[in-house]
Image 1 (cartoon, one colour):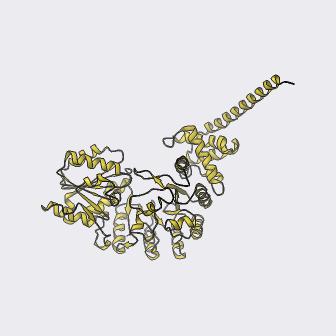
Image 2: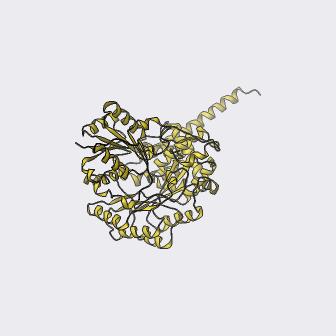
Image 3: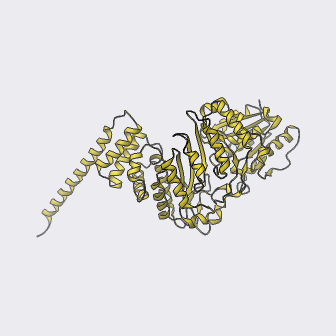
Length: 510
């Protein structure tokens, strides 16, 4: 039994609902009357509702995000049909903007717009003490972090053993990137660093080894960044892993020296490049020194053990295919471990919508709101680019094709060659998902030969080396058979062509 139930659908089981834990932590004396239920995207809303209602709640809070909006809408609809007497409160980024354009949101009893920890506490206090709802939509200003209780004690032992542990030392972002909702809140608010590090110590004492920081600009305040890194460096142990989102052009020498002290497998930096085109960057409000970012990435790759996860975006206003291709070539030349090729999204409320008319930006109205076409990239081309992004994640980012990637997909011509390979794989399979690993190696090998035009011996050398490294002990004869089979097909085609030519000669008039 629980008077308050907080529920959401995580993208995967390994993820944890950080926001729900914040809500419960800030319920004060009501926290003991609250339960959290987390499901993944495979759970049917009706099954989730059954589990929620089994707790006999008076208030249900639903956390709505871009990846779960459809499931949350369905859950809300079901709850209003089956248990209309229960107060349902919606919150989260997906219901914080453009509410009037999406009527289903207003079927909830209360909608909390913005960071809702303190407001949700107030709603629950009023309702459970016999009060009534005063405002259906509660508009909030960002709270002072000093007023918030930290949620880290609410990570269970099961969470610590099996799931990602999210943490944050700050909220907000000073930048104005038009595709991001953080552009609407330019204030950066830090948590008390002593309290935060004390909470991190408790987590480490409980066995947490992997920390994913959700701060949008971890290295904005260099002094704080250095103190946090030093905290973990002083407590280095096997299995420690730290993920940070970093500003690419802000890497002073003292911070560099600190990063160099971390061993391999410890640091992962998510670094948003998005575009190298200065005009496009200015148009979308992204203040970035591209040349400095490039130098910093090169230094990080060559002088540190940090794992580099970089980002580029397809479909930005004013950036054509050639522009994206040039950026891809430029970024691959720096050899980051991963390049996430993202598709531009029009998040509800994000300023990117200001460019829609001028650049013919057409977006899918259904989450995740990806761009369908614009005045420089038609729909068919955009679909091809989306497949490019998917195959790149399977091949370029997986770490399974390191030899092939370094030989063919780094630097000048990388975009063109991988575009050819991507198109070949899709023509051959009609699939972008559920391709078995062994089959993928065979497809890459055949695609290199038949599509990209790499000779069989060279292609076999690359792909066999990759297969042996990632699948040690597995036989590679099937790759040799592919090359042999392709050679026989080519020979057969040549023989057929010769026969046809001879027949034609016999029928030609003198």
